[in-house]
Image 1 (tube, rainbow, N blue to C red):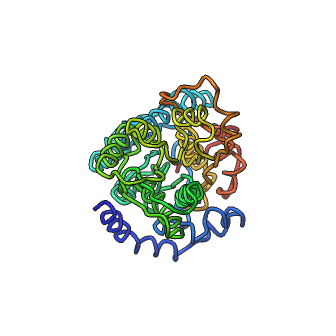
Image 2: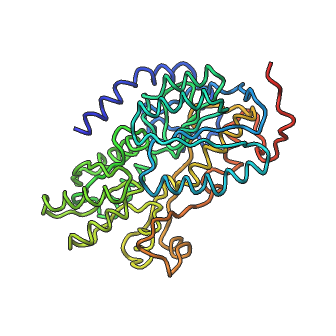
Image 3: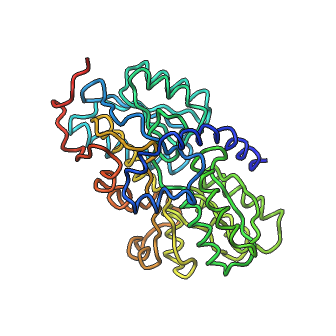
Length: 398
């Protein structure tokens, strides 16, 4: 049923995506060849990822700084979102207030209700925000409200997943690349033969569906691997644990691995531990509790894949927003980065010996490793250090 819904969603937006992609890909063509090959290769791209020219190439915020920002979050019920809020409240807001560029950030939560999020976006526009960040949202449901914001001079930024509106600037890792990395790693880990369980995130969210595109592509190249599921882990450890425990109880046959999207891998580990089964490989992302289990059992798996470390991922879209407000001009609708693979030796160095397997915190490679200033420069027509911007130099609106 979930696969059917996902395919219906893709079918609903594919026509618009094809039109957008064929109309103009100058933004992608302006990127360095290495970035195009690694992150914008059509064979490694969600077919619905918006790749046209950005609507904000010649856009400048109508008001000078300090700016009022809206953060229309779709969900608050997992450790990933908590880590985002920690980075926002304890690092980004104080830093950019001190730089004189931010007045306040208004945060709303819609608890996965599209109608509520639409209403909240419109309310933020009417409250006079200069820009809105949305997170991990339905790729099509918000489009009318995004256009409403744009028509009122408010830029919209979709972090960690895309919106299909031409008036959104999107950022994330290339999740198809990340999903493919997860699938290929699992195939190698179990010798290309066996049965694996696929646990997705939130069905219908672009980040979840895009990862599944990559996972399914990798599995299709390994015909001796049988894929069960998908289950919906909802990017929440408690949900994933319950779903996997239920599945294990009703499927007593041999299972060789679990492909699971962060933030759910700690739930998968706990489900396996409580089931009494062998501790088979799972895909570990950035959850510290799961990384600590690996730290305490170094031979458990060979690598982790950081597909979306929450603080770094949110800081990426934040920095893109600041640059756009300053008038740097994003070239393309979707600014993508590359997932980071962590080896066993790197993990042993990064994760302390006194770590806790119960930790609900996250490991971060750091914003410079994830999407630093030099990297983001490639995606803007007039790149500059956003921290060096003089608020007094901002052009006055007519």
